Image 1 (cartoon, helix red, strand yellow):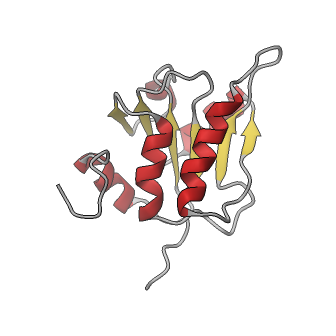
Image 2 (image 1 turned 90 degrees about the vertical axis):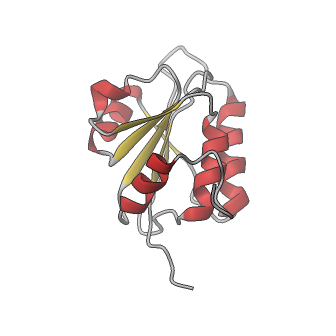
Length: 144
């Protein structure tokens, strides 16, 4: 255990977060996401919900302020409906630590998969909500 670090962050996830540079993307996915098919660097966070993991990660880093889309979610497929509460839970966790965070961008499932292939890493959670996936782009951490 470390003081000031959420116990939800495993040692492997903390190491991964510290190795990421500005502009690198981290994909937090639901339990159904084909992570191993989309990226070679995959960590498991079974039993955790994405919004709880966001709440643990956000105090440790800054979102990329040099891009228009540091927050990206998967848009529902045509004819499908996403639960709006999922995005609201994600936003609440993000805005608790970054009240001025850019708006969330929504992209198609296959564009999300393509972006995941280029991401630094994927964390598969125990999230069961449909479309419970988000990409967060790391920014420059200001020196205090």
